[in-house]
Amino acid sequence: MTAQALLPAAAGILAEAMSPTLVIALLGAATLGVATYFQPQLCTRTERVPPVALSTGEEQPVVTDFDRFYRTHCKPLTAQLFAYLGDLPTAQDLVQEAFCRALARWAQVSTFSDPVAWVRRVAWNLAVSNWRRTQTAARFLRRHREEHVPAPGLDRVVLAAAMTTLPPPHRRVVFLHYLADLPVRTIARQEHLAEGTVKSWLHRSRQTLATALADHSS
Picture 1 (cartoon, rainbow, N blue to C red):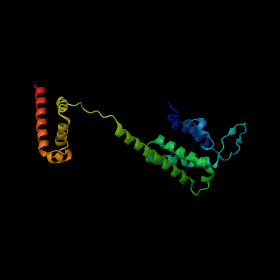
Picture 2 (picture 1 turned 90 degrees about the vertical axis):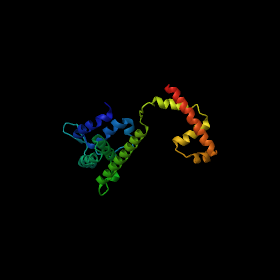
Picture 3 (picture 1 turned 60 degrees about the horizontal axis):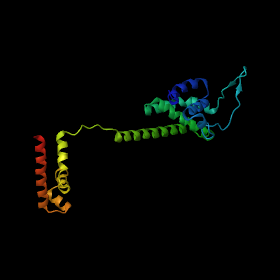
Picture 4 (picture 1 turned 45 degrees about the vertical axis):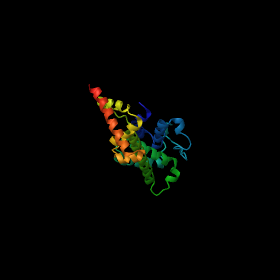
């Protein structure tokens, strides 16, 4: 099982035991790799509050304004995106990404009159981008998927073989008249031929094809 597949389950377990800040950091590390995720520009804390020591000497997770903000708004935002996408794991991933971006700018985002509106807008923008990528991929697959068509019938194979026996100018006139459905006058003007020549070539070609098909039938 991949790290991405474990993210939804891991999020639920971690949320009960750790601060949201640490949950986001660990989820990001599982997705991007520890070395990549914990670069200075990605989800870093701008200031660090000393941990509160318990009577046993153990450190207790720090509860910050962002932690409370995350706990209050994470589930409602996930529910909103889930209703829009119909895909809970994707909704969870996008909300985590939105909060991660908020954490990276928390010194600024926390001063907004409505920080949750900023996070909601980021999450929705991510959802729209995700939907567009999905639709683009679906269209690409529809255009390039393998299509199985029935094999050509024996009559068609024989006719195609007989067409190759015609001189190229005659074959072109046959195609233009019977496949492109062009009248003799148009073919003559297009090919710079006399109308009588076009009619003669069509007549000779029909005779050649009829003979070839009759020989095959016999």
